[in-house]
Image (cartoon, rainbow over all chains, first blue to last red; front, side, top):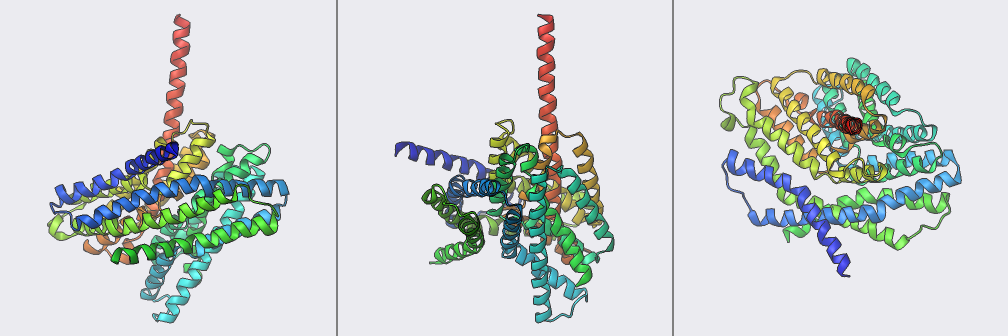
Length: 244
Length: 259
């Protein structure tokens, strides 16, 4: 019991250390650069305590839940030996975690507004909603496809850089043809698809696969799934901007 | 009462995020793999911790840091603070703020902590958890500062991103093979729960105050910068560690020769 408590206190200390930079930056700019008092000090204190507690619990939950299950799934699929089921799983994981992602919903709404103002679609509530919905499905499909491709890469042991370079070429080519208004949003959409819950899970899956397949090195082959998931949405969003 | 409502909303949002994943994981585990999950109670407790932890984390950010950060991003970009800015060099504090908020939010990013923990474990301790996170945070800091400079000057976004790609490809040729995939991954994990809301506020604030910029055309792109530069700094970090290790080895052999 005592050891458990000590362990918990140590993780709290780590979380405080992780958050210290933000507090320092905010305090420095508010007090010294903008020279204004901190408003609602009690609320800020309450929020900071919540953030510290939340981060501590989250990290503990990672080690107890998300990492083990991601690895267990990878080992399970490797033992079962069914590549097609593994790929179905990979697609389902990529698609379902992205389609409901709040950051993506926000950015899809912005994109619809831009498209309506640019005269690409009719500026009405219904057509904007349809446009945003289509964009979200497009991005979710592209993330699903990215995870499938990434898992296939781990199984085959293909070098990650060839895919990334091909993807970059894809982005550059699409940039030349896509409407100017969509480019900024498309570039940003690559960054918003990977949520805080998806990242640990997908990472554990990749590393679990690379360590249970013979001849794969978890360091060289296990990472890279997140990179694929951040690259494909850029290409797909620009394609969507050209077609829709 | 107010804070309870906030907490409720945060919990709901996190549930939306976690539930589909949980359904898929357990569905495949039971119906496709036909396996009993080892340590099921512990794993479920872990999921509960993730859910509650993330909800508290988001609620805490929303009630304390985000409003203040957004307000600051607005105030720093107001003409009242900047004065009669003639050129991009008058925005000094904006770049400093961009870099320091980019660095600080990245250090606190839970997804990055997760990846760094895994990288540390897989590399057998060669890659330090804090070392990797600092390397990524430096990349984000540089990226956001450069991204703000781009908004201020109004130069086209693709030029920067494509130049960045070329640099990443060149670095890939020279970087140690074992770091490449991790470096690419660290581009995607940097921009999550903590960084995106503050950085987006900064971009939109800048684009709406600076004359001649439109928020819809120029306000975006900061997140793209934040995902690009960590790839370079992480590869750079690996190259630096390798170089230092090599020098250390050379020193040891030298002293052996002398001895």
